[in-house]
Amino acid sequence: MTESEIRKAVLDILSEISPDEDFTSLKDDVSFREQFEMDSMDFLDIVLELRKRFKIQIPEEDYPKLDNMNSAVQYLTPLLK
Image (cartoon, helix red, strand yellow):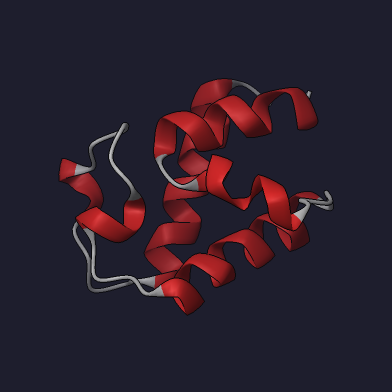
């Protein structure tokens, strides 16, 4: 997958988990939880959906790498090539 395809997939997942949020103003370098009304369970749902959708393992110690769009795309790109 390309970085733009990964970004779109992450946005799709965010939209499913927080359907009332407007992600058009998403700041790529700011934590999802800081920008939107997400709690730790919402973040865990993002991680679980990424694992399910892409059939990849994401160790718990890597969860912080999925905190914002830039780091999530950077983390997922080598896993999804």
